[in-house]
Every structure is written in C-alpha cells, then in structure tokens.
Image 1: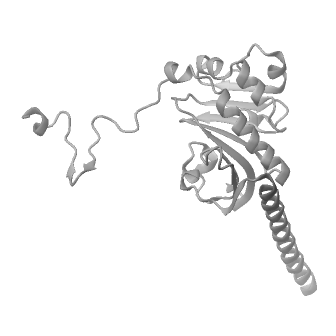
Image 2 (image 1 turned 60 degrees about the horizontal axis):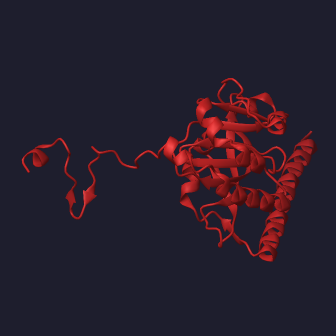
Image 3 (image 1 turned 45 degrees about the vertical axis):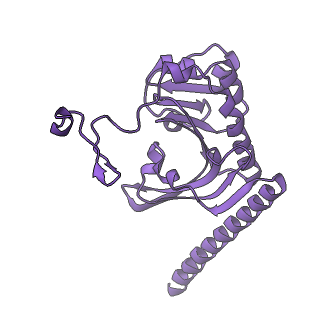
Amino acid sequence: MRWLIWVGVAAAVATVWWRRRGRAARQRRLMLLCRRAGLEFAPLDPFPDTQWLPFPMFGHPRRGSENVVWDRRQGADVHAFDFWYQDPADDDPIGVRRRLTCAVVPLAFSCSRLRVAPRDLSDDTKRAFGWPDVRLELEEFDRRFLVETEDARFATAFLDQRMMEALLRLPDDVVADVGEGTLLLWAPELPPEQVLRLLYAAIAIRPRIPRVLASLFPARPTRGPYERRWLQGRWSPDPTGDDVLRS
C-alpha cells in the first residue's frame, strides 16, 4: 500500500516539473518571436495598473500577470500579457488556476458595460450580464458574435462598421470586454504566435475606435469637485467650506 503513495507523490512531482518546463519553453519562444518582430518583452509585468483593471477576473485575491509584449513605436499603453488567477470552488478552497492571454486598449470616454463574445463559447463565458442580445447591421458580425450590454445606444455607437470589421480579425475564442475606459481582449492562454497576433489586433483596433464617442459619452472626471487633496503643502479648499465663502 505504501508504494502506491510513493507512486502518487512521484507522479505529482513529475507533473509539476513537466508543466514548469513547458511554461519556460513557451516563454523562451515568445521572447524570441518578440526579438525577431522588433517588439518589447518583459517576463515580469512592468505596469502596476494591470492589477486594477475594471473587470471581475482582476478582483481575485490570488492573481498575477507576466510575459508582457508591446510595440514601443505604438506606445506601451496598448500591450498584451499573460494573466492567471485562482478560482476557488466550494469543494476546493485552493481552486483551479486559470490562465488567460489578454490585451488592453485605453478608451478616452465614459463606457457602459459591454461584452462581445463568440457565439460558440460556453454560455457562462459569453454571457456576463444576462441582458438581451443586441443585433447589429453587419450580418457576418452577428453570426460570429453575441453582443451584450446595459446600454444598446452605447453598443451601437461603439460597434460601427470599422470597429466590427476590426473585431472580425481577432483570433478565435477572443472575448472583448469594455468598461471604465478600457477595452480588454482576452482568451484562454494562447500559443506565442497568437499572442503577437492579439497584440497586432489590439493596435489595429485603436485607430478604429469611433471618435464621436468622446462627445456622446464624455469621460468622467478623475476627481470630484468636493474631493479634498493635499496640494503645495496645504489641503485644497472645499467649494462649500468657510474658507471659500469668506474669500
């Protein structure tokens, strides 16, 4: 009986070793591809804002990002990266580690929640909110994607003809989520070649974002008018406070 325990331990150790070896090989492959393509590569995420992206997966207590790729000529704010998080279950407090490949594109306007997901994904992945499907004018786009949003007006303005054509060029199984000034493209962890394809797709999407959105949905102010801040060695005045009323 004891030998069965030792066999199980050896199998577990071998599995962990094999997975780590595979991850190291994938990382080397991605690094070489970036070097050949003239792209920047960082094995550790140099962007602290990644951990605060406004999407549920980034709210897990156990999470991390790595293998970041960007094109210096296009700016580092559009970049791709690997992301993992632990998803605990009722019968497993440790949970399953899920691995994704993501790309982010900043948006300069106020965003309603929006998801564009391939229709052949599982229903719990493609439907995030439970709202009705929004139908659009491009038949090819409607056949491939399900669009779900809290604001159909925003979805129609965001997904104009040029944007839909750009999203149709995404790799298979990629989901597009929009929220709080960010467009997130994500999929189950992609092979190194597909990571570069996802980055190039994100770079191509950026100039296709409809300019009219900035006037239809103005960006929210980063600070409220009644927020007190420490400026030049003193607290900023409260617009309704006595120090303002006396001046």
